[in-house]
Image (cartoon, rainbow, N blue to C red; front, side, top):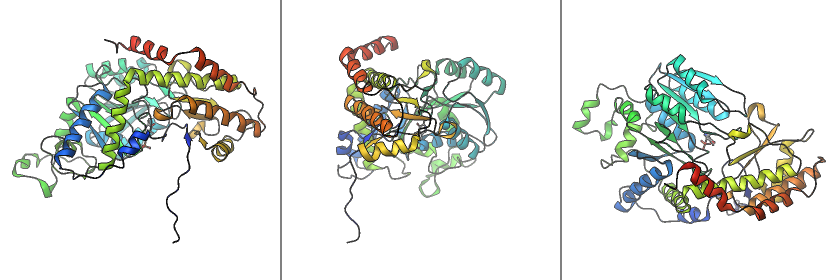
Length: 425
Ligand SMILES: *Cc1c(COP(=O)(O)O)cnc(C)c1O
């Protein structure tokens, strides 16, 4: 036989995704298949909706996964609410803002962008002024910008949108399950999460949630597929259908509600994975999980700085789970990354566009966000940099991280988060 059995090396994955899947999630994925209308499966679908509401901190009725990688969630929401010629405002502060622009344009939006330097975020008032000037139907923006490691504050933007009848769509793919994402408190109308980042589930689903404001727009465009429509569905004859069948939220709502109208075949194994990954997240509790992400990122930063490397980006708005660091002068960043992978089995990431070759991005996400991984990435990076001829402080990084771990209790990071977020109420 020409083909060998599947063989995948063990890796320590310290990128901003995909990260190591939680072993409990991988075990759930070996579970047998049941039919998509088997009551055991539809019960699970309802459970997953309940769990997602907790994850998104929302009372929205609608919370379910889109089958596809994270961008499928962005595309489903935008495809279902954009009508040709609608103005969509996208504040861009990194690569994934450009992705929202790209999707909105393809569905016929008149897209207006505002930009800021990569490595910074927008002052919320700047976004509010742009909304006032352009009067968009939709504002779409990224919460945790993975390409630059920044976190955009949203609460004031959300309040302004709600007060001015603008729909706010937020890509929280990189932040969900790793940092606080408050859909209801921040007046987010539609929010998209990702699986392969802080939830430590393989790529392949995008959990989303949306409220009645989005639902209203979607239902005005409702059409039911010819092959399964009933006489009742004739009422939708005059509607202009959503341009995508696969990403049609109106039909997905019929599938994810008691009508259980067949749309696609739900991705059985991925739903098991999502259920287990979100269950594990909620079992840890959100504040403790956010605290863990902050704690290990801090250890990593201390180690990197002790090595003599400098961190990239505006400090106050760091996305805790992605640490960006300048590549030292005269060092080939991609060669060092390849060396780390070959010699140590440790993976870190480069960045995109203007930042490629300038910074590395080190993720501390989900199951990958733990002490042994932080120590492994610091030791591999230090050794690889010395091997490549870089001048760094030798032997300091691991000591700094170890001392941080010895001096600081993880609970302190969790409890300060719990207090500052009001999650203890
Ligand atoms: C990773 C990521 C995406 C894209 O996810 P895919 O799973 O690759 O489709 C979109 N937005 C943000 C902020 C991301 O970090």
